[in-house]
Length: 445
Image (tube, rainbow, N blue to C red; front, side):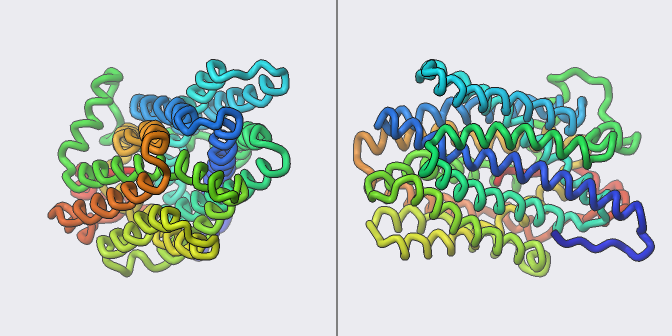
């Protein structure tokens, strides 16, 4: 990763770089393990049951607790500290993920046992992912890195995981079977807390404690603190529009990745390797897009970049699979879409962190992300039932049309003009002014 340290920063710069690198490394291993599991688990269910409906049910049982628990733990992250929440929930995820292959090896694994274990993984992942996201602005400040660049690097980390994870997952499933991927997922969740323990400075991730006294959270109750997050979002029309749009596109993306792509891979004869290959090609292109965005997005009009990225990353991937195109054409479309998707998170991340005061970061991110992710648990269920009832191609065509209409219709709303008028930004080491601390916020990747 790249960074600029002011001359004379010396040892403190090295320590700052270690904190930022440690956070990004912990994010990388956690997200990589999750991506491996995202290949292995649906393929395991589809291969053992042959049922798209049950495959969608398993996806629902993971993502519904993810969204619900993440929405409710924002005040906890703000109060207890992001670092503590991150490593403790990663340990829970590792235990649950490791239990699945263990039960299978003992010939004790059944669908009624698999579903609660998957639900526990999702319930623990939600707060863990949130806690790591919340520490990005603090890591940027400690590292003397502009916020746009830090969010860009976080986006590159996510995209790198999205590249390595599917490739590793496809290879593991092809060579050793799908449950080997779940064992790797458990190992990644164990490695994340170790990295954080060795690299992150003591006290990092305690947003309320580190904030200026004028911004510290008062000793209010849980529900009052949660309500402050809702009240803040109500005053942000741009962020509410983003959340609604992402709620629909995330549902479509979940349907695509958890059911439609596995069914396409199985019916086309490509198998799990085809899932890994398409995911990896899209991921490599997304890394390139994220790197370009981290370097140059601040010079471009955010709204134009944002919607161009969605135009490339959305409907075309549905339509190319519906057309029974050769693998070369499929990979080309996934590569172009991945490059466009690489611009989304750096732009949206900078906008969201600009708009949220530090003391509200955990609860507002949690609420915004969870509302935007609310459709994800339903994506697999809807896609599984739709494919069973209408077939793969009609569902792919309908999904592509819905994606195109959603992103273009949302772009017509007047709130989007605010994206091109960023509020005052906090430079590294600079405290925000009173105006800059006025209510700001985020939605999902």
